[in-house]
Length: 295
Image (cartoon, rainbow, N blue to C red; front, side, top):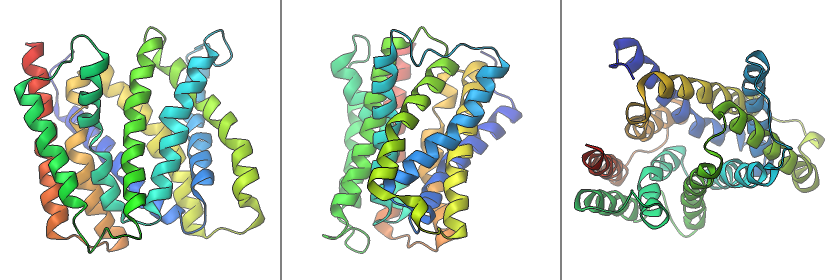
């Protein structure tokens, strides 16, 4: 891995902005589409750049191989479930709250890794980080201006969506020896297979005319944050490594809050800012605890 250059930090910032932009676009997509349809459009359009890359690089997809059940399971847990839960939740809460809630993924993964891996146990620094980060989330739930009895469950579902990402990441370790392009393309195929019938049976989106901004946002969600962002993430991982790429965890909630204000004029309260700082500090301590062990 090379030492990060200016172009690497630029690409990392672009990746953070792309992923952060997903939240306010999900909000706009909910104006016309239900959560199942949004999830389907994300995986359908997200599969296009990934499958084109696999075709260009002559990478064989194993979606229907003997390991198909792993791809199907990961596709459901890592794509179908979180995309649905986030879209369902964002319909009732501000997109900036979703960005902060979803940024807890590094904290949740640290907790899960302690119980399901041999070399990622808690230490004092990690524990402090987890406590600070989740204290910020608890504090965020006390913001009665933004979270009340009407959308409390929606906020919890977004947190559940972030947990699905973590569980999906653990399951991916079962097929970690396979090429990333193969794994991503295969789980996208299974996500499409799962969501296609559900979309037509439950929401029947093609019976109504969507708003133009919702349609643009839905297509954008698939092609850019789901498809192109994955390719950019893979480039950064290959050149600079996981530790450098993981810095997006700090930037996504910050950019998500800023973009929500710019595009949707979403309210930013003091509790939102305090929670945002607490989550970022928590992530810092968790990563610091992990890097200490690595050294």
